[in-house]
Amino acid sequence: MIAVVDYRKGNVASVQRALAAAGADALITSDCARIADAEAIVLPGVGAFADAAREMRASGQMEVLKERIEQGVPFLGICLGLHLLFQCGIEGTDAPEGRFDLMERGLGIAPGAVLRMPDRGEDGRTFKVPHVGWNQVLFDEARPMLFDGIESGENFYFTHSYIAPDSPSTCATTLHSVSFPAAVSPLPHVFGVQFHPEKSSDAGAAFMGNFVRFVRSAS
Image (cartoon, rainbow, N blue to C red; front, side):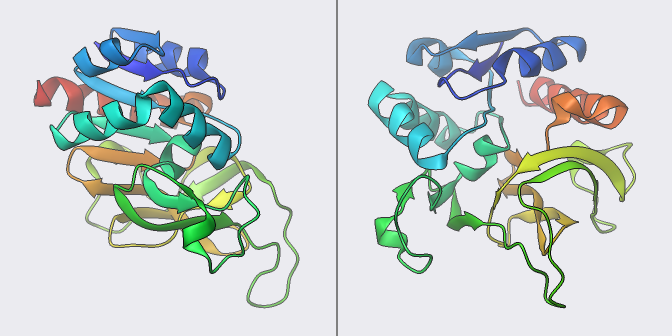
């Protein structure tokens, strides 16, 4: 069973449907005991980093997720779920960009802070933020396993204003005003994506199918 974590921040039903279409038994739950018993965990979401982190901390979900990740359970974070893998985030706080200590804390599985996407490129061009719509996901010849059967440059659907920091865990990128992580894998069993596979047509279905196969292989 794959637990789709409900922390009152968005599109859990569409993620459950995408997993079910890929052949998974997926359960939407906010119950920490159910999350603790799951064979894999998906953390979706939209909304502000700080609000989500506080909700998860108050409910006990943050602690359970950390424990399950430490135990090696397959994990996928989608959009805000990707952001929450990092040490901290500025969204929903009054912190200046350099003050990590004033930002809301995330799961801390990957290093760095999630910050607002700049609305100007290095050449001075203005870009629309939020970044909404289809964009290319790029990766090198060392294809991440969840992109099996998917070509570098395939289009996925994005909707976000904040971006994860680049780090050794970055395994795919997308270019808008800047190049930013489209996918990360800070641990061999932990993945996060900035795009929404559940809204990304055939490419998203292939991605979800790969995650379900990975979960089965890890069981």
